[in-house]
Image (tube, rainbow, N blue to C red):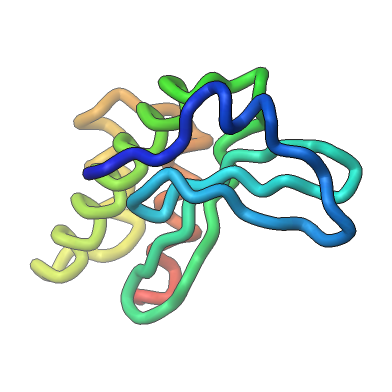
Length: 119
C-alpha cells in the first residue's frame, strides 16, 4: 500500500478554519483540527457500515506506530469478520481472535464495536 504522509508534511500541517484530513492510505489519516490538534484516525467498512477508529494523537503516536496499529486493526477485523461469516457468534469470534493474538480488552472492544453491525 502506498503511504503518502511524511514527518515533514505532518509537522507543517497548519490549522484552518475547519478540520481537514491528511490521508496516508488504506483508510488511515490525520485529522487536523482548527485548534491545531492532530489525531490519527482509521476509516473502514464492516458489513456495509462505515466506522472510524481513533488511534491516537500526533506527535505522541509516531507515523510508524500509527501505521503498525492500522495494520493490526485490519488483521483483527478481517479475522473477526471471517469467523462470523463461517458461523461463529460475534462474541465468540472476537474472543477467539483476541486470545490468538494476545490482545487486550481495548482491542477486543474495538473489534466488537466494529463487528456489532454484523450480528
